[in-house]
Amino acid sequence: MRFVDTNVLLYAASTAPDEARKMAVARRVLESSDLAMSVQVLQEFYVQATRPSRPDRLTHEQATLLVEAWIRFPVQENTVPILISAARAAERYRISYWDAAIVEAARTRGCKTVLSEDLTDGRDFDGVRIENPFK
Image 1 (cartoon, rainbow, N blue to C red):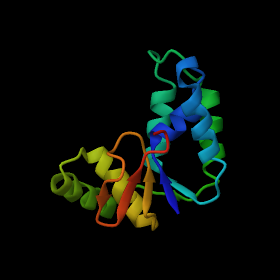
Image 2: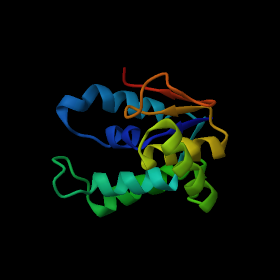
Image 3: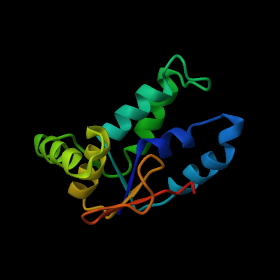
Image 4: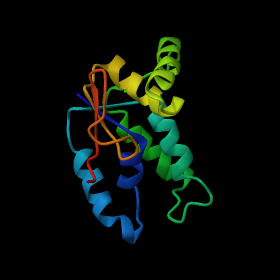
């Protein structure tokens, strides 16, 4: 299983002309059947996709429909053990808590790969490796 970070979802929903290549890549990724994500990723998508300052902002209805479509994939719930392990990982790896929560949710879900543009491509977090699908 591969874990999808928020930026993949945001690019998949993008209508910005300068993001057309990334949109196509993201949509191809989301056609896969070996994906998982977390409640955090879906929350971040909703907040960012509907943000009033976003040029290609989605309506509440559009964003909600996409979230509902993506829950066809396994979704890791936010839990206290993930919170604790993410706090420790943030300190250990010197990354933000939010990035660490993605890594730890992926680990909890049994994913060995996180598809993300935001973390360093190829970096390994003790068995969870980052892969940038947009490079």
